Image 1 (cartoon, one colour):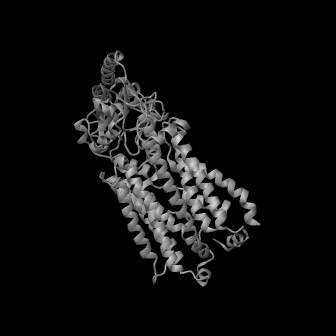
Image 2 (cartoon, chains in turn blue, cyan):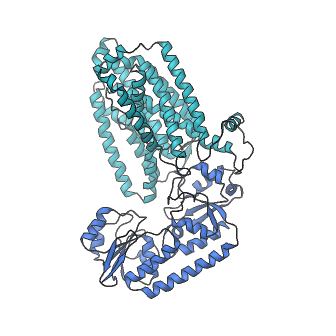
Image 3 (cartoon, helix red, strand yellow):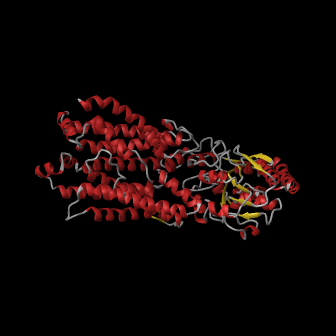
Length: 268
Length: 357
């Protein structure tokens, strides 16, 4: 019996490595497949679309999971991510039925890479996990070295336009921006996804406006174009309204490194 | 208003036209000073001389250290916000006064008749379907919200009217039921939607005064001035109405016509206010009470005074909301309750003795 402690301090015990895993978030699904699981992934959400093998798996709901569907799959491990809404009644029910629930909560890129190792231990794939994490860490180092000699670019990442929501230093996306050689103009607030004042954006004068696109979380084109009315912004004057694939940035999984590279590509 | 209050009314110094004018003038001056202060605060403090300079030249002034002129911030960000806050705050407060008189219920607020839920449903649908066009400076969400609010007004009226009369009890109940049904529909819609739409609706419901540009403000200002003006003109009638419908009828008031006018104007003003700024609570219920405690229950003074106080209050609340934890903005509805609540408790406690005696 091995006991693990998850990111919110809960103790999770597994008698043997998990063989039937249900994932409650796209990022968790990506980590599971990255460490080499295939048939062992027995349930995913409707939002889990990567890798394509995930799309064929039985669905247990979308943002709000269906308890019966989870139980029906007889999992020996359920993976959840703290940024998603985790309903307390589902939590309580799963623990009542002795179904191990492990909650991941990453604030930094290092922690995300660490999760790959953690999940590897949970499912008995330590070796694959280590190798995947190591490769990803190396790629991050390469980017870090390249960015060391370049002056950081002032970036404003738009999560939502109305209300105006961006990234604070409490979110891993903030660190992704910094690793990609950007300076998050609203980084001085620690709240992960703060509602920010337009005044602050105008004052800090970002050189690049970065919009996530694709999937339902992206910013539609016309909304991006509406930013052009603020002609005093350097980003607008120099026509640097850039896009990045939302799923590479929003998911605390193995593809964050693709995300960092995409951001670097977009802002420089 | 209960008979206790109307007895106190006769004991107050008479609200002469002269006392009324001076009070309103004082409030207007306070409001203007407040507006200037609000323009100075935000993510950066703008000094009075610089503010004066910015307001004098409406063009872009010379660049400051940050490279972005504070003139842009004042003209493009703060001023529209404050004007919207003033218009919405005034509307909500005046509607609160009128409805408290019409329904003879001190707990009445602009949202009690369900119009706000109609607006919210319209907004929820527009957000869900990602409708994006703009008309006359107003966004699709705002137009949809007002459209549904108007439908709600018709529905509530239809339910409440009987033989051309609007019994106040029925009106209240109709509003409460419509509120409940529409709120349930909104929850239903939210449960089906993806997280982004739910997220945007959540913020919309919390209310914001950062939502409009000068084009929309123009149309809004005209509407608000007409609506608030129409209600203020009913001051004498509302004084009579607060004695009770039968006494008022006996004193020569055409009670049903007045009720209709009040209902329509308050409903439209509420619909407009909620459509442009979401559900900002507290202003419509508490400002009337606070003003009534200080200036007395005579509606000829109470209505215009509440408009001025309501507008100033919301503008100040919004300024605090966006300055306290800058660059982060707190929801303005949170500030109205947190700023207004303790102050109101103070008023309540200090006037309690007078109310009993």
